Image 1: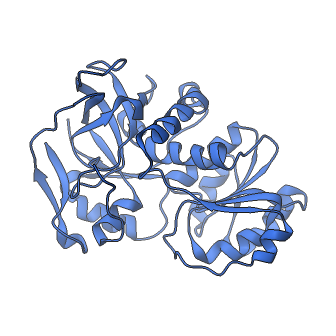
Image 2: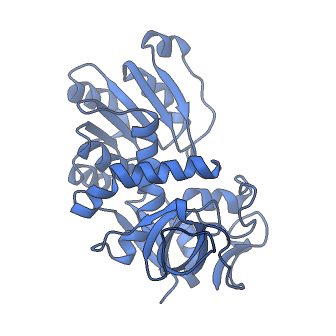
Image 3: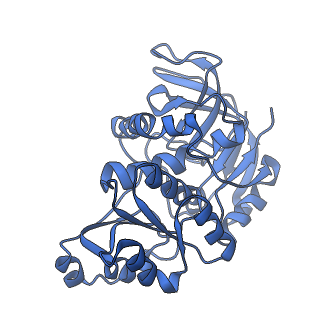
Length: 325
């Protein structure tokens, strides 16, 4: 197989596209032939030496999601079969053209979804659904603020909230990004006018849920616009991980501030997140009510350029690597 590998920690000088033996599925694993693979900020953090993979994941092959066709199955696989199109989560090793993954961590790809769209779904949509629905408990009629609404997770969160009956404010630093937010059904906002937009959308009540995908610089505003009994869930810290928290602001609103990750969760917890996505989100993908947003596709041979693009600024959807047929 061909795989993106890291020879150590650093910049793109440690990145190689290497040939490795094809993995063999064991237990409840399936072997997936991947055409396109999604890149995530965690892949860059791992390259930089700031996000080591959890135990059991490949130490030098990044990648958190998989989409493709099952080409082999392990001896304890119960439902998946060779030829099935699947998409789901891995703890590492996803940036390769052959990937093994537990069948409990994948679900079927809707028939109408092209390969690029399928590869743009797993990490973004499962993370977004788990954060705003399963953990923050976003309900119909509530207001969601998404800071960093144009990336894979952000654009998914805007859409999931809308089909769940919530109202959404989404931030972006660019005019193009704010146009995307509006096209997905959200109300766009710039960083500087978030309080005014949230006040208008919520009728002065504030945001019931804040999905923080940018990091520490936004935390003061997140608490300032939070509604009574509101919830702030932190998923991304690309702009900074250390912040001063005004506990009185949080106490006065009887609010909750918490954070979450998917990658390092135990097998059963990750399986539960995939099944919840399958129940609540996949039907909307099947009906075409949700659409994965694609930023750009790079040939696998240009993985360094793809990483540079990921680091260059705000993205509008997913960045993919093309591993060919």
